[in-house]
Image 1 (spheres, rainbow, N blue to C red):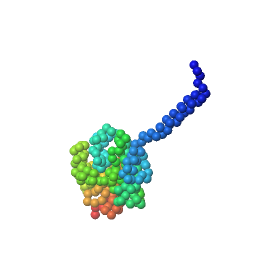
Image 2: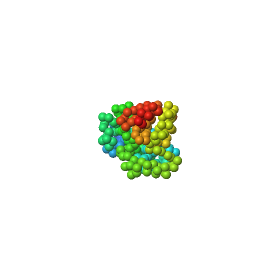
Image 3: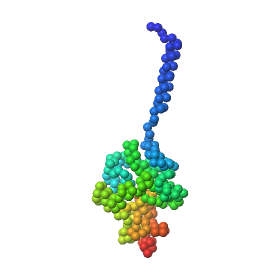
Length: 264
């Protein structure tokens, strides 16, 4: 058999090198698959908002029916286009971002508030989210309640008043759920008498605005006027602080004496 010449060997090796280089070039042109966080960020940017900071994963869980007994989840799904039952058995991952150019910024000035946008992802697709304005001038005080990711309210998303939506929620996910939109005067008096021993579950039957970030801060309406603000770092332990806020924004420690002042 005739041996290959040096020229043939060199040509063959050179051909292999060129093929390898072409392969590498083609691989570089293949777009890499996005992470879920990048998908969430892209969704935020497509809405026209500017991402100031990415806070990463704020929650990850599998949605089960019993989870919807939580007021936190009730308020979240109140501002979603789709029903919660659509995602039963699915893992939901929520990514949090601080954003600018959000509709809430028109109501809450940037020098006093920062806007958080939370994006929910299921099976690598965005299914919705929420947003909230957080005060930067008052420690642990947040303005507003639960909004959709576009800054819309329950009434704008569902076309229902809160009481109407609550009845729908109870019919769909459990008639045993009973939530009052405010704390009646007679009940606030009873709560004040055991203020030092109150736990989070003492407020389960009342609707609230979740105004915390990194800690739990829940604001409850009091019948007539005023709010009760309950805050702490864990739902497993008793609240660390409970205060009342009157119509003028004055805060008082929650006890029978301060309650009598508020109700004068």
